[in-house]
Structure formats: structure tokens, C-alpha cells
Length: 391
Image 1 (spheres, one colour):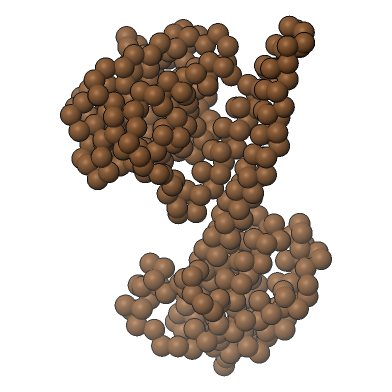
Image 2 (cartoon, helix red, strand yellow):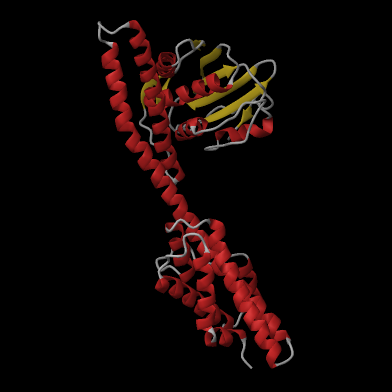
């Protein structure tokens, strides 16, 4: 009487053909190369059959249940399951479609196997053991395939974002330069000057978005935002950012005050970017009232705070504000989308600093960026009960 491993080997052609018919029925699977489909299925069945023949201790079974036997997506030689996951990612299959292929393979083998055993004799404990071992092997194949699929899809997505952001910067720069050139023309009619000013401000915002896309692609692939430290005044960087925002958003009401020593070793351009994102976020999501920006020099650190009136942000949602592309977080009609605050958080992290957030009916919402003056210096922690720290 055949065990399941022997049954799989002796019925391999029928099992592969049935799985191939299902795979071809999926969207995008009709034109799949026959040899590729068959090779993946055959190799996976052979690996499963070999696994069933291999003695397994209780410790090994427990390790497998924890995923400790799964092949790594970073191993030099990919398993058949990993190759299958990579192929499905490349061809644009959805996650659900790929997993459904393994479901179909599992169902096909178990259905044929139980029918065969019913026809040759009573069901014994070895049948249950074979089924358990088979399900473990299928789950391991799914885990390996999913891991490779997810890694490849994420890498492709970040490459696309990076390429898109890079390719946008050049034409946006050309638009901005042309707009500024036309603005300098003394013969430009006033109504045209207003339109060109709108073009320039829109191009400036688009350039900021493209830069955020590039930074997001970099950090999502495991890199940190690069910074170049030099001695500078945080007050000057903040003034530059506010001037850029006022130029692109005429009529913006932004109060700025600075106290104490604002000198430190930071990346000037990155802090202009972070300030612009914070103030832009306040203007977009706060009430149409005056935004307050402050720079406060303290012993060992400088604090940049941006305050705006508006709806209170629930405390449990505050950490979510700094996640890339956060959606569905309406706060009294306000939606927090995009990459702006995510980029701020990454820039602050790169400087060894932290961000604290408070949001109350009385005082509005305040983002406080704590920056150590020197590289490697400790940042004063926000006082308990006064701010919600994100570190």
C-alpha cells in the first residue's frame, strides 16, 4: 500500500496537469509558459515527497510550525517555492491569486489521496500522519513563496517610486526656472504675472513632493536619509522655509519668533525641508487661522515648534501621523495623507533628535522637534505629562 510520498511521485503527471489548469484559469495565467508552470509544480511536489520520507522529531515539527525551517529569501539558491513567488510578483499576480494556487495544489493532492486510500483499505493512523506532514510541507512552501513575493513586490514598488521622483525633478525645475524668468520681465501684464506666480508656486510644491518620494524610496529600502552637518543657525533655516511657503502660498499667516542661541551642527537644507513640511502640514490641516512657529535655544538642544489651531488629534492616533501614506485617519473631517510628516520624522531621526506632539482644545496642536546641538549629544526628553513623545 502506497504512502503519500509514493502516491505523489506515481501520480505526479496528473497532479501537475490539474494544478496547471487551475493556474491558467487565473487572470494573467493564460499565457504562462507551460514549462515554467510544470517545472515549479514538479519541483515543489518532489520537495514535499522528500520531506514526507524524512524522519521528523517532535522538536523539528515544532520548529517548522514556527517557520524556522523556511528558506530565507536571501539564500543564494532559491527554492522552487521562492522561484514561484518571484515569478508571480514579476508577472503582476495578486497576493491572493498566488496563495490560491497553493490552496488548489493542496486540495488536489488530498482529494486524490483520500480517494485512493478508501479504495485500498481502512484508514489508519499513518494516513493522519501523512496528511499532517503534507500540510506542514505545503505551509512551508507557501511561507517561502510569500516571503519572496513580498520582497520582490516591495523592491519593485520602491524602485518605481524612486524613478518617478527622479524623473519628475528635471521637468519641474524647467517649469520653475521659466516661470521665474517670465516674472522678471518688465513688460509682463499684471494679470499674466499672477498666473505665472501660480505656476511657479505649484511647481515648487511639486518639486517638494518629488523630493519626498525620493526620500521615501530610500528609507523604505533600509537606508537613512543622508545629512551633511555644518555649523548653522536653526533660526535662519526656519526663516528660509517660511519665506518659501509664503511665496508659494500668498496670504498665509505665519508668526515666527526665536529666543536663545539657535546654533548647532545640522544639515541646513534638510532642516529647511523638515520645517517646510511641518508648516505646510499645519496650514493644510489646521483651521484657517494664524500658524505659530518658534525656535527656542536650550542647554544642549534647540527646539523647533509649530502650532496651529484646529480639531484635537486623539492621543492614540498621534504615532500614526508619522507613518508613510497613512490614510483613513479623519479627525473631525481632517485627513492626514502623504509623506510630509514621515519625511520630517526621518530627518529628525538622522540628526539624533525626537519629535513630541500635543493636541488640546485650548492650545491647538503643537509639533515640537528636539534637536541636539552636536552630533551624538543627548536630547532632553519631553517632560512626562506635558508632551507625547514619539521615541
